[in-house]
Image (cartoon, rainbow, N blue to C red; front, side):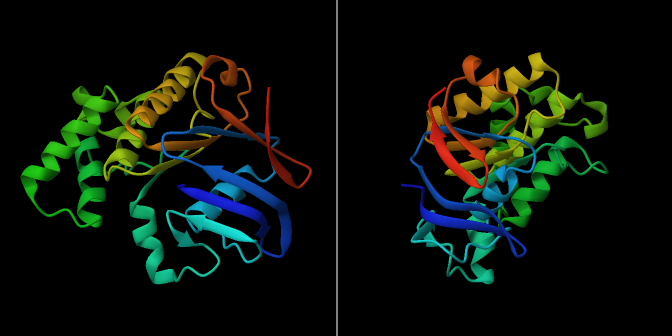
Length: 222
């Protein structure tokens, strides 16, 4: 099991956002987190990559780490085993797509130039953006930038991809293409958790669904 939360409580500063959360993630699963703005979707996702602490739970394990006891010095290694995708892409606009990806690889310990180039080629092919290698991010559409953000998340062959409203800034057709791409990634064994307010997407690209509502987060059947 990649994630195992039992009776976990999520706080934002001193405010209880979610209580008694039971959440489980297995290899290759595709999970939606839905709910209104402010219902706790992003806060929950932040606990997975240790942006928010979990102090109160029967169990809170992510990639074999006890999230109630994890030390700050061990968080970078945890994050290297996952990919994180944001609504606003967070690409570096002063360098090409290739150099955006190279920056991440070098920052996470890759040294061999040939291996770096090969991995960049692989992930750009995976997201259908090989032709964008030498382009600047601002020359790309929103959907293309999000594909590059997904390529960046794939660089270190993550066990989990966490995507926080990855289609929030995209038109419906582009959004569906991005979610389909994320769903296809699960075929490799990587699990994907994404928050969304795009409820029609759940019919087009099915997955397991958890709903945040009134301080709780529970699996639902739609």
